[in-house]
Length: 412
Image (cartoon, rainbow, N blue to C red):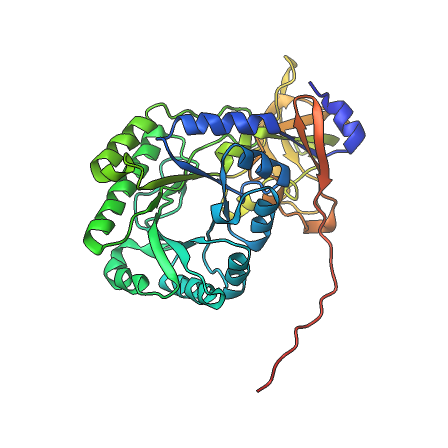
């Protein structure tokens, strides 16, 4: 077991530590709860650390990417380009051309215009791009989950307007519509809510196939698998999920059992969340007007910055307990010159001393790269990957300004 104090002595504080062994175990656990066979995509937005991506690719995960930067990481991690799913609204023709030039063949399309841009980029390269049509209008968010559908959104084709877009997208040149893409919710804690959303998506996919002739070679049901974030906890289990989905597939897609339908799922936080911890040192313990503040060397520039944008669950960091010492209520704040730099507002832990190291667990997903890295120009923490008690890699993300030369403007 690697000692945190030794790691900080060698690599400094704050410090992210990722356990690679956890990734393979969690991937196997998630696969065991899903119908088989099924494709499992790792969503790089959760954590694009190259070593973590490579570890998950080695377990058989494919890559779901939403930028050329994420695609570069996925390819360098060993994921073949044809195994990548390129997603996201507003994909530009430039990035689509770049993705296709690198061998990407599968895209999630969010609108008729998106299909048009994919078509143009594919035509420029003389290839046919495979498209999944992302659907907006199935299910909703359960308690504690992030709602991703069934409301006005930049994501997906509105199900209510299917008569307007179904025929149009099928006619696009250089594009082959091969299936549908759903993602009703994220971070669903209830197994029944998650299963219900998947089953509803399966029924909707069958209806779109039967009523509008949409080909169904691939059915991507998305994700929604929950994970604890920045506090102690374990991954939820979904023991009934496989049987419920298998029954729905048997009813609506009997060809799945024959191997002619590819079933896919996506996960970011479930696969990587419990693999990471943030070690942060206490700089000062301060009393102010009846409140106690623990001032840390890590703040929203290192953890939870995006939660303020309401696209992640709000951060409320809770370090691992270290013993039976009396508890004190305090606020955990970071070092930034900003009143919003708060990691926990009403935390009950043993009163720390300056120099103490706190471990914030379960931040392998939506940790460092989902934070305000460039704010106040502080150094990023070192990120370690370890296997057992061996350090595999140590690296630091650097925000740097580079000179830029304007592109030539061609006049007619």
